[in-house]
Length: 64
Image (cartoon, rainbow, N blue to C red):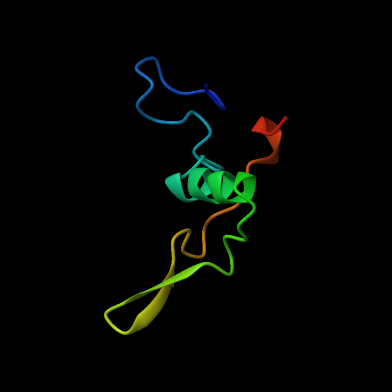
């Protein structure tokens, strides 16, 4: 599956102002699993971190 246009090699997104990030993919997968990505944290080196950091957004356009 693809989402959005990319260069001729599929290496970089053409929409540089609003590219799809790996954080967005993680947020979308967690949403499909019924997990709120903004509340899911993992403790690493004594700090609670989110898998989607502060950048992840659910990609609603690819959900059926």
